[in-house]
Length: 261
Image (cartoon, rainbow, N blue to C red; front, top):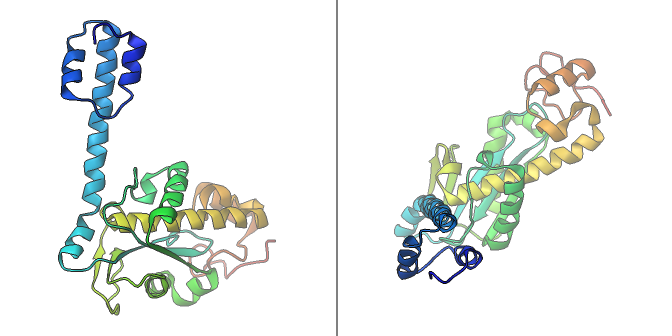
């Protein structure tokens, strides 16, 4: 190893795993550049080990259900309960147990770019996926909670691969004909729910970007319908449009929508 150039050692340390004998020999190299390269490799290795442990932890709810004999487990989550405008989207995903989805996490903890990459990976690796869109008129007719509940039932019922058990983010679904666990903060606790949250979030964001082209004055491409300062200023100036939720304040107090097309 002492005869290797720094460039050769740099290339060697691009590997995630190295034999202990090689690492031991590298530790004896007193070149400052090699010492720094080795320190950088060790930090990267520690980070990868920590991430692998986190991802393994995400499969614990699924693992518990598998111990009970359930092999096909669906995760369910929603995106869009809080916004003042736009549809609600519920996602459902059935993952192969222990499948590799690096950086999988609660969709809210990921950047848009990370979600886009994971969305494609989930669609590719999942055994089955389903999204259900609830339009604004149904949200206003049912109320947002009941709209969420009904869409979750529909997603589980209509997903192509019939699940044997379900993991749901927060919302109890007592009428399911299969065993189900509702987990508070489930999108950070279960791989299946996290995958469902990403499906729902990415598809809803894309819908809001399309709606921003129809109603450009509201800036939906930026805030996705949430009650940001920018959105509230636009509402004050232009009033509500056909995709604003009349059951939500302040639209409710204004007496409905107007045709802002």
